[in-house]
Length: 479
Image 1: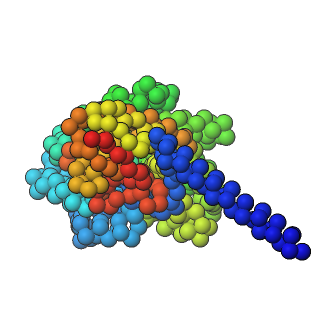
Image 2: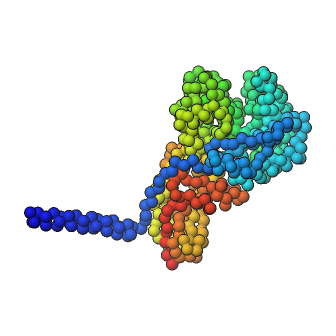
Image 3: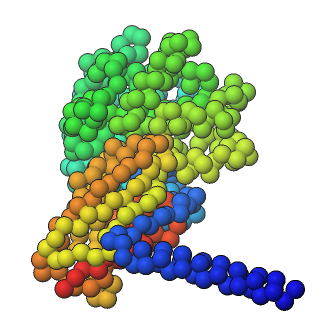
């Protein structure tokens, strides 16, 4: 019996020694390896990232209505409670159908956009000559003639240019009821509702008064097809600055019925499939925004969570009205898909792994491999920088390396393998440097503001004070 116990203890001791040896070998291999492999944990948080997600709606100008105005504290409260960074600013121009915009009105728009900037938001603009005040009575409220619209856009040009940094995109507006490009009282469409030379002139004027890197959204993709043809954008045309590459769509009756209350036409199954296939391809490169409008029985099969999530994903939605239609939003909350919609509208970049050198020499090339995926339904539609940041862990001295990456082409569902090579300065201070990734707004007015940088959807990587994403690794720069 004693012999058996002795043998058991001997075997146990050998197993312990073997385990220690394996750990020691692994540790030694890790210490001797030239690089470290870092794995990242995904987060399911709803992230207030720029130029995507739910949007809040406010009126900047609406004659006869007291509840008008853009308040910075209201925007900050909305962001804190609902993780929203987009605001749609509506301007009802009924006072100006027969006259130029007043100086006080233009100053008001300037003030509103400054408020948007101070709050850390981006704006979606819509100008309209009526708000459908008599639509439910079967009456059509007036819009303005083409010449007046073009005059108003010329007046707005300087304000739009000066504040384009805080414009996510604009809606074409101006024409028809609610500025939604139907039921014009000034002949701004042809007899069957297609774009004519007048409405085309309004679209082209929009593209003229905006900087080349900002887009205009039409109420119907069919209006874009009237102007540019039925073929979706190609990768070569995308982000080129060409007019057709700068026009997207806002569907303001999403999932309302089989044809979204006339958004799609014809509405036979084959035609619907082709139209949605067009949007599936087109919206890889332009924003798809809008709102729901019907929670009634007709909409029930379409607004159900399983169908809604499928349509959001297939059409690559970037932004959605977070306040309308309340019955639809309530349905999504009750059925349990609302939080997923909040998370996945637009882009959602998640780090998966990085391979990072443990040390490097001054004046030498530093090479990293970073893997990330886009779990969102779309990609960024406005320009976006990517930078590698090296920050000395002792002194805080920072080195910034711009990278030749374009997040607009980090498409939904795809894994990106970033091979990062940067040339280290010869006079770089020796020591340990934290490795970070920054995805800032390229405009100089916003570049250094964390509210306008992209937060990656990972646990414990975001630095709120800087807007950087930590890669949880240090690299030692040798003396």
